[in-house]
Image (cartoon, protein in one colour):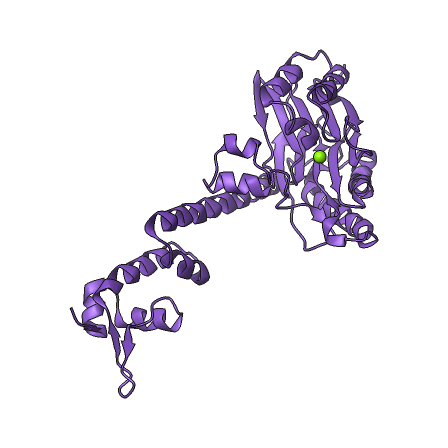
Length: 362
Ligand code: MG
């Protein structure tokens, strides 16, 4: 079959001539031949399928560069790419949904009639314990932990200045523990605190031989009244034991987790993936990444666990859950969790914070 004029090709592909000219200009679909004298575009009949695919991918909102890539792939690989693209869109939407929920909640509480301005106006008692251990293989400990009445935090430093980076990030948050946070100011106070932590890590990283390779994870919970704000970046984790259920309330910012989210590998494959320690986001001396922010209502009876990957990547989650559920108090829980990591070989620094939320003492 011969070449089709742009009009015939537009009818066959059910696209407008204008769209076809645009696709040509964008480099998405070049005509098979352009008449050197008249400038008329001619298309091959087998280009119809590509034209339709371009139109569908544009309707999906896929960026042009990625459309070009997908159109050049064999169908099964193109299908994988579309699935991965959509999973990424959904993950980004989920992150923004969390921030939106945080804002709605925050603004709802700004109503003067219901907004407490004093710190800890809803008294809850927190009982807590923290423990950090070098493990059995590493020479030094680059993890840092903090547990106090209003601040729980775990940081896992990496790179040549890793230990100082982790400690600096947590130090930058410590004023929240000392001063308390009015519920109404929580979002602003958190943002300032994260900025302080980011600057502190950048100062440490800047002094290190490889600034972009030095940094830290940070998973912290800040309490204001009965609210717990969660700040999270990297692959340390926070879990909640509530009503017998054990929930992970953070999402790992690792390349492997992104591959799982995009359906490229299974969660089972992720556990032993050779690149499982590579972080997608962290506080570093390099380009800025934003932490996730979430808000939780603390309830009496809740038990929170914050830990570095020296626990979560080493000890199966069922075991962690068993210890967290069975330990009588936070001190026993952190000791047993660290011991569990070391009984599993202790390949990494391991840090845990466990906190129980209780009714106020009367
Ligand atoms: Mg670690």
